[in-house]
Length: 207
Image (cartoon, rainbow, N blue to C red; front, side, top):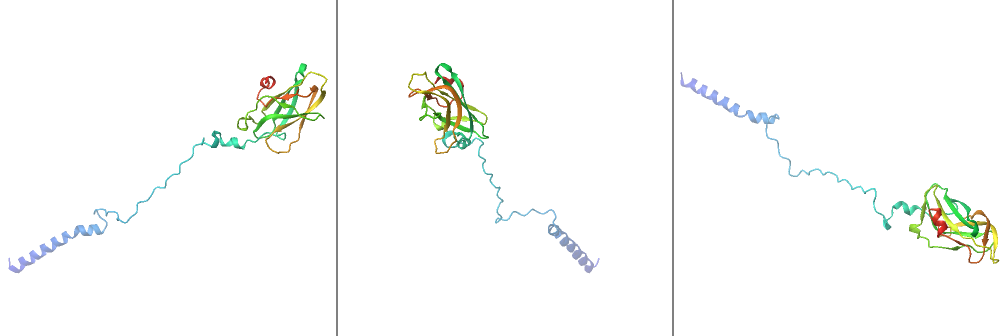
């Protein structure tokens, strides 16, 4: 073999090796199996929005009661119906009853304000009534009771056939008095008294 031909064969082999060494670089450039680049240091990780806490259904309110209680106003004569029925004939004592006829709850505060027909004055209060926070709550259709004490004819007073009642609202709310007939009710000084509103007949007549 001549020297020139051997040199040509060596150059051909070296060229082939050089092309084979460039193969991986070309594969990477074409999206082949190269190493995945690391994330850029300047990239800011995404934040997961925080979920606001949800208050519990029975959250506390000032005063220890439910928030709904603050919307329950005192009952007035605009909210109730009124009746009086003879409870004790010997003393001409009467059972007073109011029923919430409205569509919302109300509170029967303190004592009823009772006047006697065309006489001046009103029944005195007998027994201690609870404060406004503990006053009797009447849902629509519920009733409250009070006892009106009569008396025996001692010659100092007179018998009346009707009474009028307004509710205690602890305000200057104008009310229309509600009337009821009371045959034989004897009215005399220091004789007639009325209990606070309660939720049963027995307490109303025994206080």
